[in-house]
Length: 204
Image (cartoon, rainbow, N blue to C red):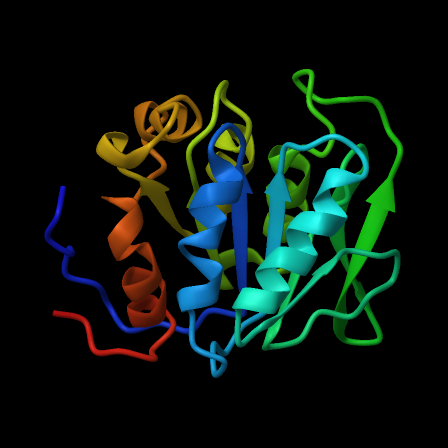
């Protein structure tokens, strides 16, 4: 699928991203290409062992006009900030004094993964609701599908990486088959798609 669907203008307050196998390279082809004026915070779950997510955040931060950090407990999300769940810990979101903040947990793996995109997405559905933009990238398994289903039920908008650019078309396919994906985009067009959706570019 290469043509953008017709989209109704809307407001987003948060972008959440799920990625697994092939994800670090995919993120490197998305995050650095987003404008420094990207108007919403970004929270990412990338399946990686403890210790590896900090170096991923540092690498993306050095390449990007946005600030990219490993998430810490209580960190306040803001436009221009990208947070990556620490390897081996779940990331969820909560409201504190009107601000969106990070929560970290050492709870058991969900569907054999920790961090879990489902946990991030489910919390986003609870605390942000319809103004969430979700993105599911390359990866094995079905992490993100349950969370995307909850987001979609709240009125959120879900984008998935197209099969032709995925290293493993597992997580996106699972969400597509669940009927919760609004559009599929090849990796190279995802930065433009995200900027169109948040109003930085005109949609075709």
